[in-house]
Image (tube, rainbow, N blue to C red; front, side, top):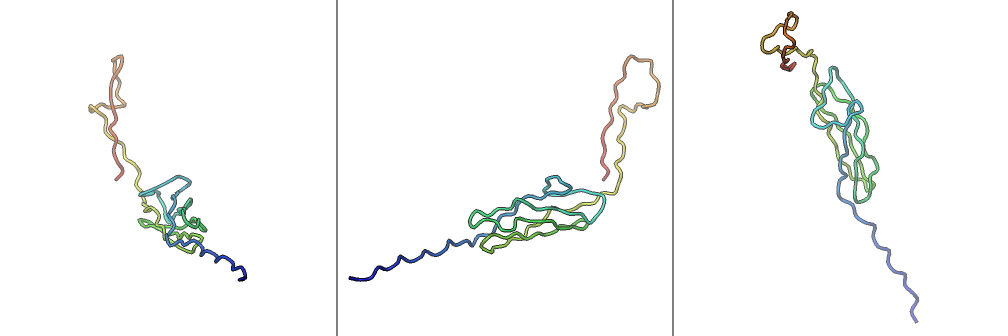
Length: 127
């Protein structure tokens, strides 16, 4: 009779896939694309990154961006795979908005004897 042989231990599951970047916030608000402010540097926060295979170990953090630039936060899964996640662009706007134009050329401070008058203010940009 032969002695019992233990079944071999299966190898641990393999995870070679990088984790997936989560979402960025700026001043507590979700942001993608660009973030506008009037001073720099400013902080972005990355959170809720995921990894479907081994699970996430480090899902993000906070990084600081200078004017007209981005910052990078590295995430990591439990298998050691990493990915660098890039923040949205931090844009500066130091120009006050300008008033639009009154239409149809009415003087908003003028007196009128009409029961009602119609006017509109057309918007403008500060760019």
